Length: 264
Image 1 (cartoon, helix red, strand yellow):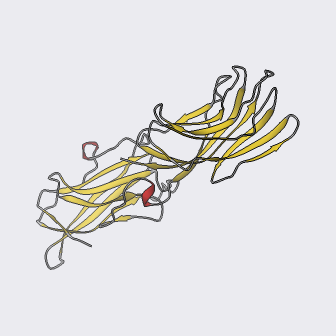
Image 2 (image 1 turned 135 degrees about the vertical axis):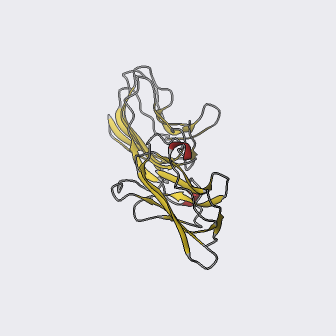
Image 3 (image 1 turned 30 degrees about the vertical axis):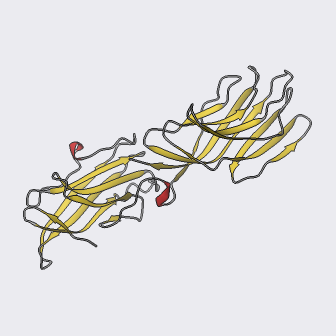
């Protein structure tokens, strides 16, 4: 572990962003060349916001100033014991020496039974490990429209599954189930070659890594397909539905299983 120089009057500063309210704190020791402890710097436990917005020293995330020149050792960032519901990928923090840009001590995701220690540098996003898996259930769309949800600001998604109930109107025509991710300029999608036809009711399932299947009956059936293995960035639209939908076709009970990483 590399010791970082700190000057008298400098302090610990923490930057944090979270999609859930979380109690976060940080501590570090300041020692001299012989390892004698000169100071213990603390950023007291505080509650983050839940909007994924970045908070920092301007919001009160700083310690008392160091009273001696020395070296920072044993710096850690912690979650409070009452925030056990926080999952990996929801809360990202970075601890530095400031206000004169004295160097980053550590950064990473905070979650129960894991502290981010000095010398740990985890980049935000899927490269560092698993994210927070949750279900997103949008309101039923208007007749004739696919079900959609949008990746929020400061987030990256991997979609593990999407599904809905599809009711075709009593109007002739084939509607091929589809799902995907796009942003108005580029789209990654998948479709199932077994369509819904006049008046048919059934369920559509797209699962990451799942091959195409159909389980039809005369009026009801499941359509199962593979969701594209892709990353959805903030602002991207994730959807499930069918192509060539009639204006009276109806989608209900749509849901998306997503893995989310907060990124700042």
